[in-house]
Image 1 (tube, rainbow, N blue to C red):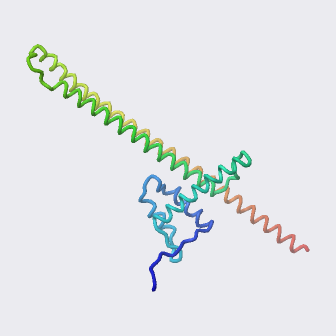
Image 2 (tube, rainbow, N blue to C red):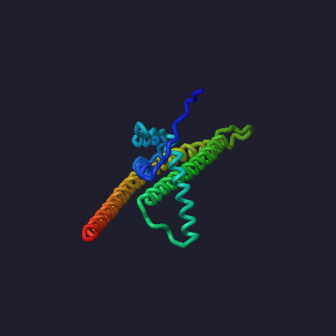
Image 3 (tube, helix red, strand yellow):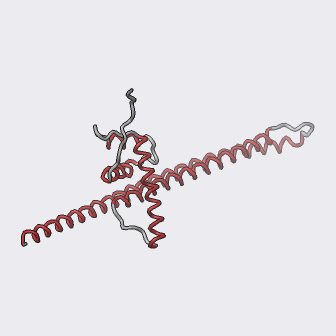
Length: 213
């Protein structure tokens, strides 16, 4: 009896590097739909991936990287030698931390807004609820209603101003992140080129030594 099973995928070091590069470039940590794009870019007829596989592999590499960092610090008190793999993993961990911070801030902002809404509804109810046998209190209630309208108008204007400020700050933050990413990528490429030239020089030296024997 034949069962339709998914072929087991074994990642080599080069596959991991390609995966990590795509994760840094596309940031599926923030946009979950990007995992599908990462899988499509890396897939070949003999190496078929889907969003779930690349996401789980990335998470596994991150956990391994965390353990290696802890072990290295315990053993020697210093970080391991910097390689492209460790650099990419560090960048992905920063993306995850940034996403977690934004979710936390969004949650706190939502809770603050809900609490403020409850307070406004409470005040509105107190102002608009008629009181029996207390006609002398009518001017006070009218003044309270006017105050509430002014308060809500001022609150709305402040929220709009805050949103505009947050939008400008976010644009500036994204611009700085892109600039930093371009700088880091250029440094990685330069480092890889240096390593490549060193390897070529080393191989040439070996050839000369071999020919002289």
